[in-house]
Image (tube, rainbow, N blue to C red):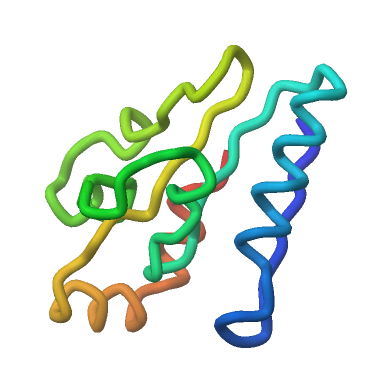
Length: 108
């Protein structure tokens, strides 16, 4: 399975929106897609009609020692997204300190 990763150089440059649009277009072309939000801003969920107040996500699962894979939502057949989740301030600081662990832990 090909992996495409997009990263903005700072917040607000459109990486999340572009990622969501790319996921939708690949899905429309018949590809199976899973899109993972790697940003603590947790905004990808808004592109998939998920309530922002829902705190669940893969980062929460990791901090709670739960199975992060179970946080994927099947939005449509062959289109899954995995929200980051809403972390407390202390957890966000810890996330930034060990970010490489999280990136490595999510290698598919």
